[in-house]
Length: 99
Picture 1 (cartoon, rainbow, N blue to C red):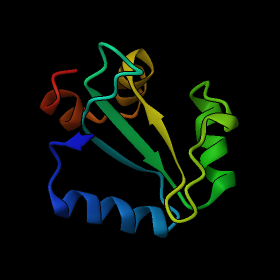
Picture 2: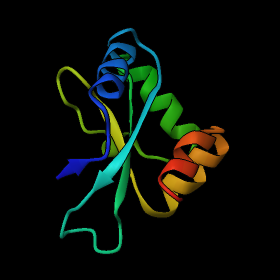
Picture 3: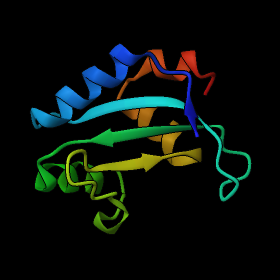
């Protein structure tokens, strides 16, 4: 279950993904399969090769991509999420979600 994002943020993320940009969207999230993880960052791009290359630069495997037909993306949480948001200088998301 996702919460803590505004409609405009989701719209902007979708547009960026559709335009072939590497786009970040962090929100609160609850999933019993991942105890202790309360946020997720979706990193999307509809150019799969670009997304694979981006993921590889951060130590992520291509098989971890959620291959949604419209919005393919990596789901980042836990230590991967914090490390990558810091490396990508996504200070607002780190601060807002107290990561």
